Image (cartoon, rainbow, N blue to C red):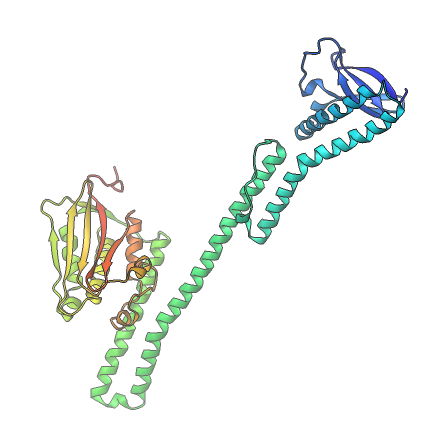
Length: 408
């Protein structure tokens, strides 16, 4: 066959579907016989190779979908360029054939480069950012092409995002673990050193002095109680967070809850000359929740209100009914809380006035326990405070008739 030749290639049904022209060993579809307005899909298109005297025809549908679509994309551009070259071949000299072959090959390469290179570089960028933990700096891939390579880009990007989120969570957990261990160590160190110091003093001779030994023994007992309270509070928080703390919800009267909570802080209030009051609105409906855990919430809030108040200050429990819940408030006229500390009040071991809290036996876990118990009831703690004027801690409890926690 000459360097320029025309052939017709039959399709699978035996009908002539397309013309091909061989130019320097390249086979290019240039037209159809018969009705030129007819269009064929990918199963009607064929790739033809020339080797010696043998021609081979294979349908593109036998290739993988991605390769088929890519071949059609490249073939369209290649066919256009080669077709233009082929139109020149009959009227021009052999030099055109020498130019047309490299031109088509270059066009095919350039087209493939444009189609693939950008997305492959994007894939490399995503993988590199995943490795260096900088995925936030990479824009998400576009799904405009909609082929297998774009699907791969999307999947790699989503996997990278998932890994990035998990890495951030692990970093936060590690930071939290270190901070927690440091706080616990600090809280344990003070009472342990105090107990050791008092015990050594007693052994050095103070044990025989009745006016001294009793005072030192009382201080040892005080610090031992503080250690016991710390251990109990840590155990409570751990059980709540791991959902190992049994919650027994029931309908109850808010007035009963107030009465038991006030009894628990009565001695501490008397020591500071404070007489807590309660203001319960008439006709208040019953609420629903774990009575014992919610009593612990009120005791912790009352304890803080007394601790951070002045001698003879005011502390009041208030309850007011809403549409389907009862709002409970603990109000005091104490020293107040600076605005910059409000967001951190429920953090473990966080203290606004560290010396005052430790001197009065606080563990730094009271409000953290309040937060977790209310969270177990799907409730939140709200705080309003003005330095020098006092604070209001509030939360709501669902009424017994409207509670989503109550079993049917």
